[in-house]
Image (tube, rainbow, N blue to C red; front, side):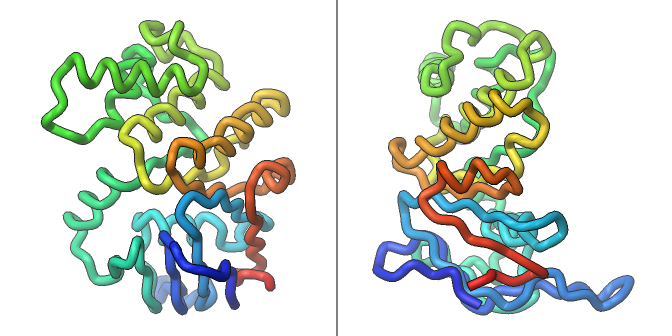
Length: 229
């Protein structure tokens, strides 16, 4: 199956990537899959629960190793790299947003965003400046010194997005980022994520939210562990 986009400039290139587990019972999780995502593109991966959406996103994010196939990121083969190499890659190139914000509640919004910065050469002033700019992008710069525990669910998710964006990643992976939010707040989060491309990042959005189809540049549908043509 293929979800490729014609043309050059692919940031993500999956070729025959699949996942099969042997224990406790041999189970095929993801069918051999071909997928290309162009730099700057916004792609929504949709499908029913258990279809393999999160597995595919986890492989793209190098959180899960495939059992077969090739995965190239910006031309570099990722399959076969050590855990340390993959951790370094994620720290430098990827930003993640999940269903839950996973903030440190007793820290401020700004301090939570700073956790996304991995450059050891940044001094305190530099970290503060970058974190506040990231909060400004998501409309929360006025709440930078508020404790995360005192933020609403939508505000917490905006902080999580700011944390993902603060290091200027090449790719942002958002896995069901609106599932825990009400409809209005969820729509606002989808629109915010849709603007990631203007910041120079590529977006992979995993969701069963049909509204995402209207905000993403391309929709990839997964059914029974395979991309539907």
